[in-house]
Image (cartoon, rainbow, N blue to C red):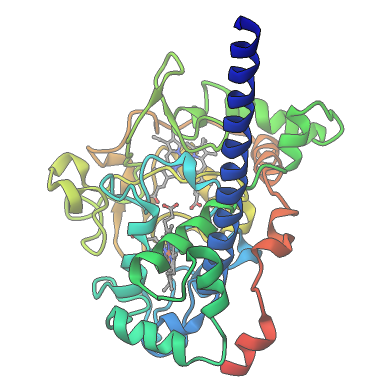
Amino acid sequence: MRRFALSFALCLGLLALSVWSWNKQQSGQEQQALAELGRHLFYDKRLSANNNLACSDCHQQAYAFADSRRLSFNTHGKAGRRNSLALFNLASYDSFTWANPLQTELAFQALIPLFSDDPVEMAASEIDVLAQNLTLSQYDYAPLFNAAFGDTEISLTRITAALAAFQMTLQSYNSPYDQYLAGNKQALSDEAIAGMVLFESERLGCRRCHGGMNFNQTLDAQGRVQLNEFHNTGLYYSDMGYPESDLGLYEVSFEQSDNGKFRAPSLRNVTLTAPYMHDGSMAHLAQVIGHYSRGGSLNLKGVQGDGRLNPNKSELVSGFGLTEQEKNQLIAFLAALTDSKFIQNPRFSAPNEQANAKLR
Ligand code: HEC
Ligand code: HEC
């Protein structure tokens, strides 16, 4: 009897296990279908008011899903006020965008480029028009929605969920630096290794704000991760703060001490994401390093003033001396964070270039 009960329990257990793994497989497949739908939407210009701008226009694979412009252009051909952010390893951020701790949901974030009128990006009018636009298109979405959701209904929640699922597949962990950490000591040049030592050093202090595997975590002096930190790095000091066009975290918190504070972006793929900073004001890495080495930027053109004197500037940006050789070493290290497989991965590319090209 006991034996029977035991084998019965075992059978039940096995059954439960197989149902569980079948379910898991199913949801894995659904997740894949969802991401695939998201990829099509990400590259589709018909999500914008003038049918001329896709997510992928400001987030291009060749630039690690950032763009190469100082400020990106919206559906009306006008420049926005911020530099486009690269998209990869997104789960490693506490919040999204340059300076908004409240922006924590990827699906929700997509509503801004789609519908916002400040900033205007894609300026789609409403979901009904959007859905109609997609339904009437030559590009057949029905099978994609069907595969992801089991029916062909187009809704905003489905669109944003699919966009988020696609963006979560953008994983980039195959740079020479990663290969080096995995044991391939040939992956980094001596110059890059010297640069890594500088980057990790207390003298330069880069790690305090570009910590962790993705170089985007704030660490305290003991190396513990600090969540939701934003920093004023002394880019500007004009009229008692940063230029009015972008006050960073202050715009969310309305605290004077948050004027000019921004999120530290990941430094992976950083050679691909020029120009740099929230306003794209620095064209080259050498310029960025010069800024940190001086302990803030002196602006003689445009918004004049010395960012070094900004009272909100982080004490971690206090300046350091650096020889020309050390500067080159640091740049060589940053270049070793480039994942060239990531920007060529066909799974992340435009799903059907020809179909989209016809519609341009
Ligand atoms: C007109 C150019 C433009 C378009 C089109 C655009 N974006 Fe962006 N994107 C930006 C800019 C600029 C930022 C930084 C915004 C900020 O900090 O306020 C950004 C930020 C983001 C972020 C935050 C990334 C991070 O590291 O925090 C995500 C995610 C994102 N965009 C996804 C999308 C999706 C999805 C679409 C299409 C529905 C899209 N974007 C369309 C320019 C654009
Ligand atoms: C106090 C925190 C802090 C320290 C220390 C720091 N950074 Fe940054 N870093 C940031 C923030 C915040 C930004 C974005 C600033 C902005 O746009 O206004 C940034 C931006 C950058 C960028 C531009 C990235 C892009 O995609 O635009 C690079 C490159 C960079 N930092 C490298 C370094 C290096 C190298 C060091 C060490 C010498 C360093 N950082 C030290 C916080 C810091």
